[in-house]
Every structure is written in C-alpha cells, then in structure tokens.
Image 1 (cartoon, helix red, strand yellow):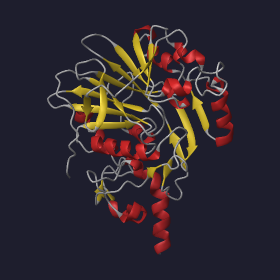
Image 2 (tube, one colour):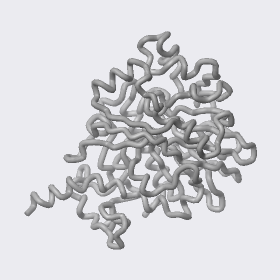
Image 3 (cartoon, one colour):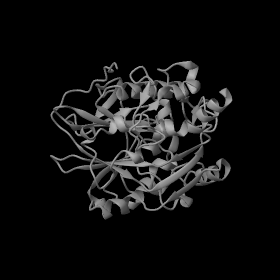
Image 4 (tube, helix red, strand yellow):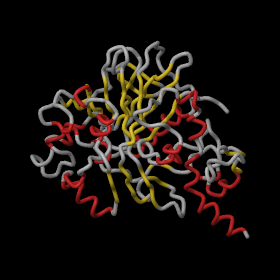
Length: 361
C-alpha cells in the first residue's frame, strides 16, 4: 500500500488531545450531504465531536468546535426555521462546559474556542464560557455574519456568541506555513498544533492538526465538515478497497474478514481507488463545491500518511473505535485506531450489497 507524501514541519513539541463526545445526536437525510448517494443509505446518524487541545509546557487549553448547544431551540431564527423545513432531528444531553467540568476541566482555563465554521452543529454556546475565552473564526466570517441576531435579523449566529469577548478572524495569506498541502497557522508557535485553511464546505471553514507523539511522529487531523461520511475519503489510491476487510464491518467481533468483493457492485465508476461518495453539489449555503473537493483531496493525503488519525466531526462509526473524554487520544497509533476504524463505515452499505446480491439470484 503506497503512503502519501503528507509532510508536517519537524518539531519536538506535542499537545495532548482529548476527543469529546458532545452528547448530541443528529439525524439528517444523506441526500444533500454527499453526492452519488447509495440506495438504502438514506439517513446519516451524526454525533458532533469536540476537541480539547492542551499545551503541556504552558498549560494553555483550546477547544476546537463546541458541538450543538443544549438549548438549540434558542438558536437564531434563520436556523430554527431551517430545522422545521429540513426534517432534521436533534437531541443533546449536555453542553460542552458541563462535560468539561464533570471531567475536571474548568471553563475559565479555556484560552480560546476555534469554530471550524459557522454551522449550528459546531458553534455550541460560547456564552457559557467566560469572556476571557477568545473566539476564533475563519476568513470571511466577520463580513458575512456580524453583527449577529437580533441586531441583524437574518444572521445565523447570535450576538451573545461573541458579546464582550475577542472575536478574532484568522488569515492564512501571510502565514508562510504549509502542513502537507494546507496553508496553516502554527497556533502555539512550536509546531505542536496547527489551524489549517480548509475552504469549500462554507466560507471560513478550517481544520486543525495536532502532533500528539514524537519518535515516531503521529497526528490527529480534526476534519470538521470536510466530509460528512468516511465514504467521501475511502477507498482511495492510498487505501484501495481490499480483498479482505478486517475487522468485519458487519460483525466487529468476528475473527473472519469480510470479502471486499461484496462492495464492488456499488463502487463509484467501478474503481477500487475512488471514494464511494463525492462532495455535495450544488453545495452548502455560502459553500464552494470545487474548493470543497480540493480540501477533501488534501484530507485524503493526510489519511494516506499512515500516521494521521482523521476525525471528521460527524463520524458515527468512530464511536466503536476511539476513547473519548476524559481519556486522551495521544496513543491512537499504538492502540491501532486507524486500522480498526478505516472500513467500519461500510456497515452502512449492508442493505445495498444485500439487495445487489438478491438481484443476481
């Protein structure tokens, strides 16, 4: 299996990362979230992962995204009206501040919250954090979305999200830093944590990359909504559809591998190196499908590196693989999470391959 040339500037510094299950569950139609949908896979059941990044040498702490606010009925009308129209179903048990404090992390210790983008299932409720916590947003955010609601009745974000706190818009033009093919910002200045320019899904969309071990280096890429399902990343030229898939996506505890041939009938263009799904077109509001496709290709490079765990925000299948807050994710390479999680998403296609098999009988 070829490895990609995804390269990260050398550094002896790491951060500690904890993946937070923000306790939200979102059910949305697959149609409109991806292209080339596969019959019978009609719905996406989505968690919303949040990331706590801790800089050990300084004690500084950062959050990447905030998931869904517990009182999501209090979102701006532009969003609550969309809920009614789209048929999206959502539930949330706890907000992120509560989860953090139950795990021994005080809200006052969070230096900044990085919004990957402005969508309701990522922005949470920053007002639950002290005003000393800065809010970082991607390029173009302020022009489009400030002021918030109710000052601007059409805004999808709230004035209260950034009232009294620093709202800092990130810029990548002059950063001079590249992480793989991504323009990047070295957040702590020591090569341990980067914010990545990842446009396309919507204006200002960013990803992040954390170095979590050295000797060997390993990284966690926080992919936000670059993809909505792992079938947008795989198979690829780095991870072709294998002849034998283990663990078996239909029976995770089975010692018997799954035949890859089961899925050949639903491959896109019949290619074992092309992802099952593509980027949604015409794309999301304020989105650019062509740019989104370029960003997916960049994430595929990271996914093909052999030492990078890609976590997209809504990957339900990783719930069976990763350990979440308050546990740490730094040892993912040693624990084999990449291999365990690579093909789990194929269980969503069981009904489709069963139907194809029945048609041949």
